Image (cartoon, rainbow, N blue to C red; front, side):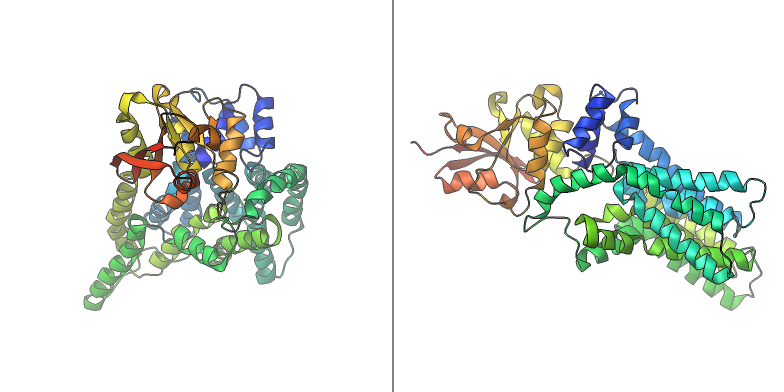
Length: 473
């Protein structure tokens, strides 16, 4: 759904329209990303492929930055595994989304790469400091939680200061110079926070910061799904194989060790800075924003690549371990790319819409399902879709998705809202598309409570099509 919100804002006919769409609360982030998408050729086409291209490129750039950091310390094979492990991490999930998270991650990876070269930068030191400031400023301008990247680098620089007993005033100056950029966006952030507070007050608000959510952020972003966990399994298996070989034959150095003590310290500092990103996002949510979801801490996905490279480099047979890791990284990437497609509920919904008798209009009371189906459906199908608003006396634990539908209906003619009472007074009833879970569709529950008869017409996957006949008045 978030992709639809971002692209809807970017598709406005003018930059003023993009700004107004953001101001109304359609998407809770600065308009910088949407301004960029606005100028992409082919954005109005019936596909999200074009709008996802910046994220794809950004993920590749992030992986190359991690490769450059690793290559300064480790052998080329180990550095390549760091690059591949980064691509195979949960970062790949965000690489195929029309959202700014992959871009902010790439910018922070570039920031770390620049920061890592500062001790050796002499003639180009001013350019490096400017690049550091520019990358962090772009992070803040792409997403309000981009400020976490600034906090992470502050942690890195503070640890460097303590470890080296030296204060680098130019670096602290570059970090401080990001402050005015953040302050420039603060009025918009305050305005959007006032809008999102309506959703946050709901008892079942999905983004409420909890310790369980923090735990899920760490496990989901560092380990991910089964395909992503293949890389970690590969590390264990490869080290086990080389360990058996080492037991039977003395190992020779394979070029996997650190180049210098300073590089060793810097790498440890950067990994600590990455590790605290979810904690920083959680603290910001608990103190100020009131909303915490794992995607706000996506920068931590840069950690596995560096950590895995460090573990491999510590092995006396680092080159062999890196070679054994290759099929695991490839299998992880192939396993994930095979799953990149429309979400199963959307595929099911599109199949069912083709089966609707007489191609009649279809209503939905699940805001998430409706928004994503409208974006994915062909034009001739989309015109038959509408959203049925739940009645005021039917509470919902989390009105976030419905509120998004209501906002979109004022900005984009593709989204249409039918009042509940109007639908219930239809003489011939109406078709309603829903997921298997009744709790996702409060309008369906309300119709049954008012004596309506719901007849299952067809089902496919996790979605069902009902014909709802209101009780005669």
